[in-house]
Length: 271
Picture 1 (cartoon, rainbow, N blue to C red):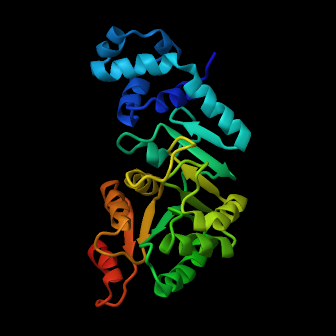
Picture 2 (cartoon, rainbow, N blue to C red; picture 1 turned 90 degrees about the vertical axis):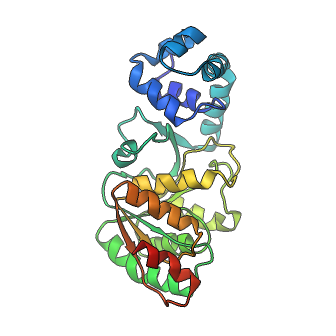
Picture 3 (cartoon, one colour; picture 1 turned 120 degrees about the vertical axis):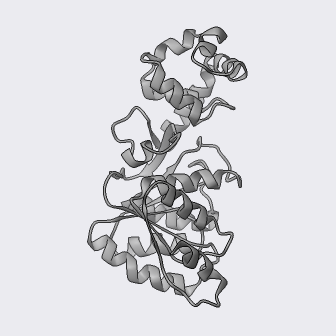
């Protein structure tokens, strides 16, 4: 018999079924094992649109969807937790339509206490690196975990500073954990696995598609208790993360920079 987490994993793998629908199912149906016997009428009775009901019936009939993912997890030593697990981060669970599944590699970290996101532009320069190198060691010394997105630039500076200070850092990727992105940071990701973890909300084979990154940014903001913006341009993805953090009621901090520098726009408007 499948566990609740395995059933949630199965649901998350069905194309066209997102976290909003799954959260409704999870909060409404007490015994998820019954879902495998549901017909379209049972789904629509729950308020699921008929088009999604068809996807659910067909998807749950396809046992290979789940089995292939479980086989990959076992083969590559990747683990996952679901909304049903006690380890699921409480702050993230309290956000709208939280991700159903969190895949992870490395050393599991308790994400319920002292989590600080440090974000910024991929074009961030030596000034952002200097700021990260100044701010992160004190945070690490006070047992803060550094959360970022694994991207080039500011994210890399934040992760690297945390590792050099002997701290814990978590990289939330915008791709599946079988497709680390960016590839230029592969060595960094290996280092992160040694004393922190890589995290993803996407099925293992998911490529780093552009549309994945706003969802990734929501997770960074949802996990973290606070958020520091190093450098960011007007249209930087870092500002999306900062906006989510503000919506979630998190503390958001901005590192000041030269007012004529376009990379100072993000911190200025954030502050």
